[in-house]
Length: 231
Image (cartoon, rainbow, N blue to C red; front, side, top):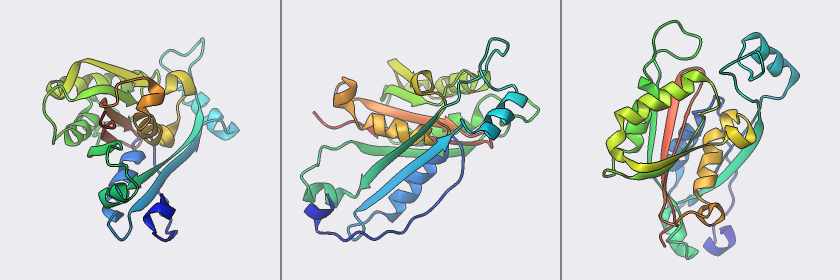
C-alpha cells in the first residue's frame, strides 16, 4: 500500500495504556491523524493475563474461572494490528470497497468493577449509542465484544441491547472472542476490528455490519461500528 500510494513511512508512535475499551480510543486518535498527507495509520494492542503475578492477582480477586469460582474468566493473551487508511489512499490502491468504520463511541461507566453500587450498564450503553448515532434501524448484524464469563459484563451488554435495540438487527449474532482465545484484555476491540475486516475468511456476507465493544475495569467503555466490504 505504501509503495502504491507513493507515501513515505514516518514512524510517530503513540502509546496508550488501558483495558478492554482502549481500542475505541486508538481508532478515535488514528482517525484524527488521517489525512491526504498522512494516508495510513497503524493501530495495535498487545496484552497478556498469563504472567504469574497477574494470575496471582486474579486468583486473589476471585476472578478466574474454575470449579470453585462461578462467573470468572479464562485468561488469555493476544495481539492485533490493523491498518487504517484515508479515503484518498483507498482510491490510489483500488480498494474503494474496503471495510469502513462508521462510528466510534466512548463513555464512562459510573459504577465500574469493584465499586459498590448498582450498575445498569450506562457506560457501554452510551458508547454503543454514540457508535450507532449515524445509522438507521436494524443496522448491526454481528456484535463482537468482551463477554468473558463475568456476570457484570453480561449484564452490561444486556442493558446496552435494551437501550439500543432499535439499531440492532433482530437476528443479530453476538460473538465473544474469550470463548476461543481467553480474555484478550487491551487487544479485545482491535481483534474484533480485525475480524470485522475479514468477512471472506469468516464466511459471512461481505456487506455484514459489525459492532465491536468493550468495557475496561476502570470504567472506560468503547464501541465501534464497522461496515463490511461492499459486495
